[in-house]
Image 1 (cartoon, rainbow, N blue to C red):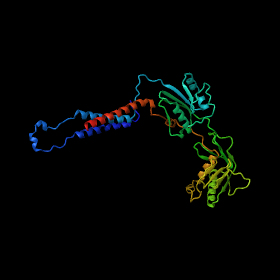
Image 2 (cartoon, rainbow, N blue to C red; image 1 turned 180 degrees about the vertical axis):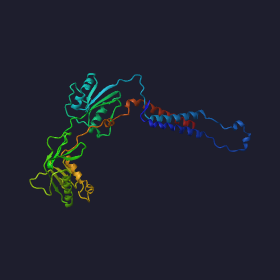
Image 3 (cartoon, helix red, strand yellow; image 1 turned 90 degrees about the horizontal axis):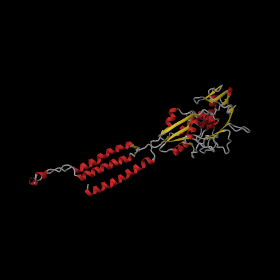
Length: 397
């Protein structure tokens, strides 16, 4: 017999409570001298010792009640079986051509054996011998994966999971899997090329392997980059603020970015006619934002759904902004710019230790394993309470 909450078995120590109460009621009062005692027989003078049978049975019933309640709260499970059940194999596959091709032999062998092989989708589409993906594109992420695992989980099965090892799996704390579980993973070798900027003096601005932004005459040969830069030439920016101090603060931050990373930022304080801007820093929310430039709008709490419109409720001055006061404004503006141009590090796969820690075997048994025993113990507890109350009222104990 196993228990889901074994630490609650410490509650069985409470069995000493009814025993102590029983002996307390059996305690005799202090004898008092009485003149007529000499006329009583010596046998009648002796105090009654021992316990009466009725009271002893009542104590045992109360002890059993405490033990039964502690066992019931610990949620016991009976795994007794004359014959061990057959374990069925279930194969859950990420809807990916790379995953299907990499494990083609294993999946085709499972299909030949008649084992269940399904895609990790909400509908659990079965795999056909050609291993073709589902007709309609389906989203795949840790939440979708957890939903699929919960759907195929059964008490007498072993789950085989096939997926790509990516950092996106760690978007959730854990992924719960059955006790019988085997993971088959591949690393994503088809990472998309990185973007970079062509800046002043024929230099390239990109993220290195450590994820740091650097400016170098040549790109890192160990990384894969796009064939063309995301932006070439000067970055035309307009700093359009009503507050003069805010305008000067932002201009100083842009000058710092120019000095550190070699960006060629051409700053206008007023919008020039017939000039297209790459970066618009203002305190006025645009009514119809263009999809190309990056907007940074201060002093507003309203947010637009456009990805290229960044808003903050701060006025960018040393007196009103924590970023400006701590000197973090240039860094924040630089992060917005490189994110706008897609200068992001390629996703790294999880280490084997991180991957193993992500998938946690569920210790909770299936309902059918404990429902019968729980119901029996609960019914027995109700009967024992009735017996205890009847004996206590009958004996006035």
